[in-house]
Every structure is written in C-alpha cells, then in structure tokens.
Length: 135
Image (cartoon, rainbow, N blue to C red; front, top):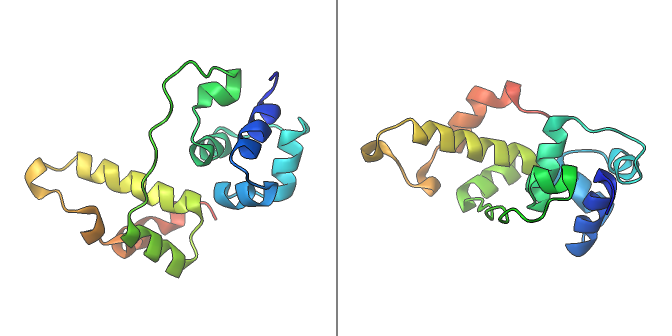
C-alpha cells in the first residue's frame, strides 16, 4: 500500500467496518474520512492518533506502512466507563481520553492508593476535564 488513506481503508475493510462506523468511532465526519481515504485531505496528529487507536494499529503503520513493529495492546474499556459514556453521549475517543487520563492520574499515585477501575468516579473526572475534550 502506498499511502495513508489506502492503509486506513484497508484496515477498516479488514475489520469489516463501514466508513460510517469508523468515522463515529474515531470522532470524525464520514465525509472527512472519505476524503482522507481517497487522498484528498490531510489529517491532524490528533485525528490520526484517534484513528490509529480505533483501528488498533500503530502510527508507524499508518504513516509508513511499517507493520514489523509489535501489534498494539488491545484496549479494554471498563464497564463502568462504558456505562458512563453511554449515559453522557460521549464518543469512543472521549471515553478513551478519560481512560488515559485516569491511567495518568493513577500512575502518579502510590501503589497503596490505587483503586479498582470499576470503582473510579468517572463523572468527577469528566466534570473536571469536559471543557478540554473534543466534541
């Protein structure tokens, strides 16, 4: 495959997803995704990262076609976050961002103060960062 758009499309097709499904999961418009896949648009680093995460591929693969790197770790969305995201109408990318923020918060705490993922107060975190989350 020779370009970014072709690699995105190939991975999307491998997963059996429509453009609409990938666009929704990635938090971008279907029209933008179509233009991207057809080489008519450039993509920001943030959108590219979101697409890579949703497709479960590395940025190296999307940018260069380098699939010799180890595959990305599968992302597990905790049930409590999934339920909260559904209630709040959050996109996959917004939920993933909350999960990553939670990981950063817990990484800065001592091991003795870590709480289980399903006991985490997602609403409190969301309320404190929602102005920074992309719509």
